[in-house]
Every structure is written in C-alpha cells, then in structure tokens.
Length: 171
Image 1 (cartoon, rainbow, N blue to C red):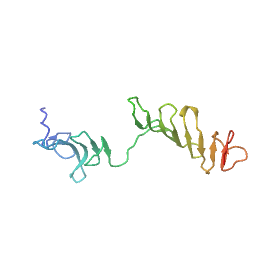
Image 2 (cartoon, rainbow, N blue to C red):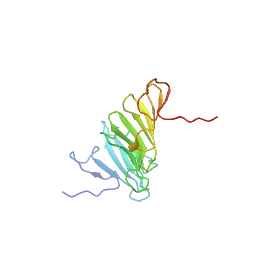
Image 3 (cartoon, rainbow, N blue to C red):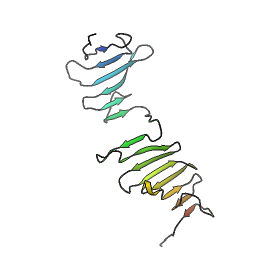
C-alpha cells in the first residue's frame, strides 16, 4: 500500500476506496490559503465541510469562519458527573469554570483562593452563592423564592428573608 499525497483536494482512501464519506483534506497548491478542511458526505454524497483549521490556528467545528481558537456552531456535550467547561487563567489547571457536580447540581466557580462561586440546582432546586466552595454557601435562594443568609435550610418561622446571625442596619 502506498499512501497518496495529501493536498490539492486529494482524498485519503477509507474502507470503501476513494469517494466522499472518506477523509478529504483540502488545501490550495499556490499556498494563498493555508486552511485545512475536513469533509464528510451527506446521504446524497454531497460533500459537507465539518471541521476547519485556519492558517491562523483557529479551529471551527460546524462553521467555515472560526473567529477564536475554537469556534463551535451547535451544542457541546460533556458527559458524566464531574465534567464541565474549565478555564486555565494562571497556568494552573482549572482555575475557573463550570462543572456538573452531581446529577442535580451545576457549579460556576473561580478556584483562586476565596473567590466566589454559584450553585444551581441540587435539593429544592435552589440557587446558592458563596465566597469559598469548601466553606459552604453564604446565601441561598430557595425554589419558593426565600432568601437564606448564613443557613442552607429554612429557619423556624420562615419568611422571605431568613438570616442565621445578627443583622446590622443603618439609616
């Protein structure tokens, strides 16, 4: 088997020989365009561009004009508990992000010291806020619209605003 040269619309053979549905890597021979394009075929054998790597290094999935390092047209799925969208802002893994913690809870966080976080979901479908994920929530809005400060469960007597601790007010 001799591998064909790739470029100028050459097709790399797959299980069915040469044809759409196999991998097609396309470039221009005059190097005026440095994009690498990946195609698959539709049910009527029409070639459809699925992925593009531009000369600037941007990658597009489902788009022919990626404007960032990764541009996706459509939904992105991260399956499984503990997976999410993680950002590295300091050269340290996962300093910020959004993660599915369990089947009911999604956390948006900044992992830098005592930076804040937000929890959506969990029991009673609530919205929680905190300043340090390991220390627990500082404030919660329950599914009924009650605001809890300093506690994660309703206080005796209830009310729209429930505070566990002292309250200081000023005119």
